[in-house]
Image 1 (cartoon, rainbow, N blue to C red):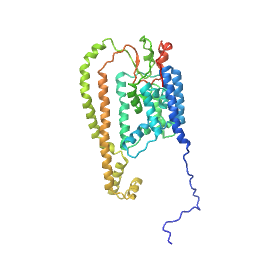
Image 2: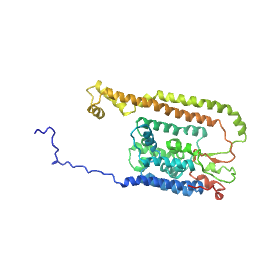
Image 3: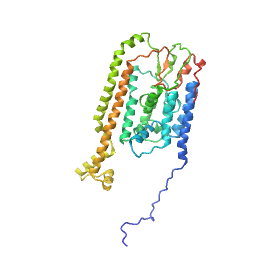
Image 4: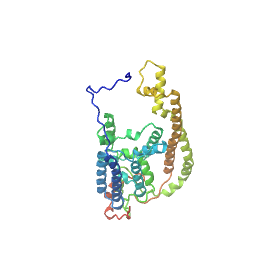
Length: 407
């Protein structure tokens, strides 16, 4: 019998690598993460709503920083789970682990009841930035208003990229994971250090101007049953809470001529209201028109261009990806059909991604045309992180008797 395939040689210095097995305890840690998160959310909510205390909120955040950050290395987190949830809806056959769904949903459920308590003391990213706040600067209202649109745009892009198969960009652009894992390139550490150092003078820059999960928490916090209360008694309008808030999330009382200004702004309100569907649809079509440019980032689209270029230039060295494709017995026509479906997805999801951004901009303009009537200094329910700094600054803090909080 002829040996057509050479037999393996085991007499040399070659050593067979050891098989690496995953231990069952890793699954226990995943569900332990869910249990610990629920407990941390309960304590954060209690010390934010029931018994306001900056000291206790700070203690919960330190625990979360060390457990979810350095011990569990920041993964998997509700922020990154956005991508898993997206793929579960857009890719047939993708099975998402139950603990990922729980990590994603539980903070949102708490947001419906007690506001952004996940941000106040549970998120390790927020806790790390909260520690770095030393001398925060106040950002002007117009600039802060424009920057506040960035998380919505970022959420739209990362969902778009995950749905179309480009990749998990939340994980790629996470500035804190290299520090939690103590691994990464030099550029990764420089990128993360820029956020951490910026946090010294700009309170929570990632939370305020980048975090995509914060967008979802912000939306739900607007209608939450309980929110942060600086003082349940009469507000003296001393403005100390506004000075204490590093993120400028305290809304000051409306001006005396609010009724007159509000009457004059009704025309703007109805104008912007009519423009909401126009801006939304227009932004969708604009984004859809440039979707082909984004499709060039897809691996199969890149592969097709590489193969076409190699066929035109036979003398150049072929890439590993093109060699693997040629060995798979697929034809370039079959690859072209797959790419047609891919580009169709880019067109469809591109419209929705652009429409979402357009809707946010339109609603932002609509909100600017309204002036809410309020007499006291109140936290902005949608933006307040619940850090608790305003509690100790309020003269009536010692007499706080908040409404009963039940879980």
